[in-house]
Image 1 (cartoon, rainbow, N blue to C red):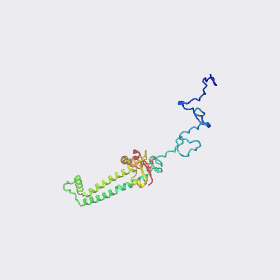
Image 2: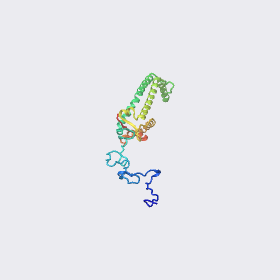
Image 3: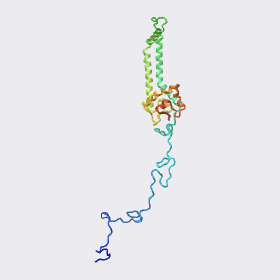
Image 4: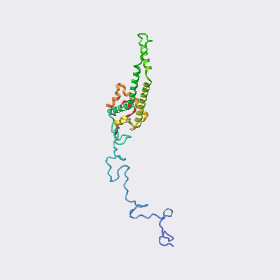
Length: 259
């Protein structure tokens, strides 16, 4: 016999279908919350792309962003904010007068002692030569070559050893002073003269000092500035970046920095 539903021959009460692995089906959430198989809530607002202001926000004025806002224009080289330098430095290209002044100060530093030594050596040599009389007795009359050689021999033989030592010492001090300036400029971009005048030599592409090797090359290239009546030394007067020939060859600029 069947009771109730004709499709249920055994008279059993119908049961709710079970979920996978014997779990009960999820109960629909109250209040319209989203669930499995039930209507979702209100659609969410699409997320703004990265870098754009969120909804309701005003984009900052004058600040760079990642989403198409204009970036601040890069400062031209030799102006505040250049690569490798802090804000506010350098303040511009060094003037021709400042460069000449720094060169004179450096020259005075390394040449002052050698000049004094050369003067002492010259005085010593002159006093010894004045007391020596060349021997012309073996020279035929009218043989000016023999007379000249005799005079030179007398001068060289009468030069005191002290004068020779003084001149050698002056030369060594001059060379040593030049290498000192190269080392200082290569490490910091400034020699004592440049530091006193508030200027600095840097690599144009990096804004950093060049190092000893490239600074030495730059000093060798300075001889090219003297070609054509020294026009290379005057070139910064009308050059856009105030560069000499040596600066253009090695790619350096001289800029102003706070003292």
